[in-house]
Amino acid sequence: MHIDSHAGYLHVMNDILSLENITKRFDNTSAVDGLSLPIAEGETTVLIGPSGCGKSTILRLVTGLIRADQGRVLFQGQPLERKDMESFRRHIGYVIQDGGLFPHLTARDNVTIIARYLDWLDSTMAERLVELAELVKLNDEILDRYPAELSGGQRQRVSLMRSLMLDPEILLLDEPFTALDPLIRFELQADMKDIFRRLNKTVLFVTHDMNEAAWLGDSIVLMRDGRVVQKGGYRDLADRPVDEFVRRFLRAQRPPEAGNGGGP
Ligand code: ADP
Ligand code: MG
Image 1: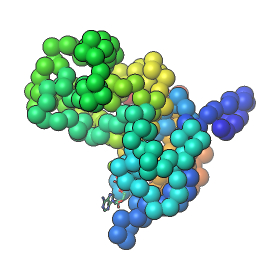
Image 2 (image 1 turned 90 degrees about the horizontal axis):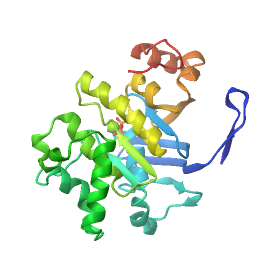
Image 3 (image 1 turned 120 degrees about the vertical axis):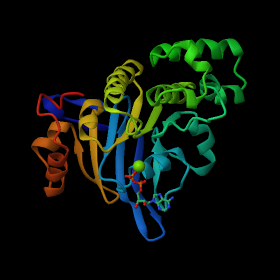
Image 4 (image 1 turned 90 degrees about the vertical axis):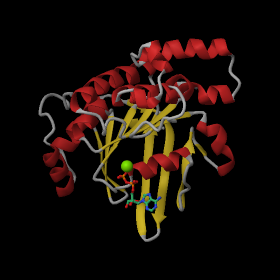
């Protein structure tokens, strides 16, 4: 738990996840370098920074797909051990840049794959599918199509349905809109913000687009070379950059000047 005295009032937040002093090397590169980061429950935390700064590695460490060389990840205050990973994975949904859908399965079968493995009742699955399709604004009939028969935006909506199927507490999204054209991206950003707010999930969202970060993030974590350079709201970074890198990164992205970051 930490106390945030932001804007003159006290705000007590629980950290659902906490990364403590994490280091991860690949050969000679430090992908993540002694990074500590608390993730507040129910908020959207955006990881942003130049390509190669370690954003995806952090998400993969949280999923347990890779293990840290040093440091630990706490979930609800408890360190995650290797033996906990399988049950912990039920608490997380994960969406990657191209959606990661299985090409030989229909959208419906992609969404329900884990639920079927867990022997859910057909009626329970069907109800959940209706709920999720409505949430992400997809027509039921689209669910009978294969990924190759869907647009990029539809594929990402299906991926989001799949990640939400088991109702996880935590959503990890790794540049889910990067490959989409600007209009589709704009719509998805707007819908996603609405979905995050309605579901009240803890979201860890990776992007390299400051405009997207400002629109979606309660908290923005600007990274460089596997470390956190600055964390805060968009205005904190824009108005009180801690160093020249932060200033340059924000200037290069030419984000909106309006309000607390504006939107797409
Ligand atoms: P980002 O998502 O911020 O672009 P990544 O987390 O993917 O960055 O990568 C961080 C660094 O670690 C990069 O230098 C990348 O080349 C390296 N890296 C990531 N994954 C691997 C891997 N499986 N093998 C070797 N190097 C890797
Ligand atoms: Mg990446």
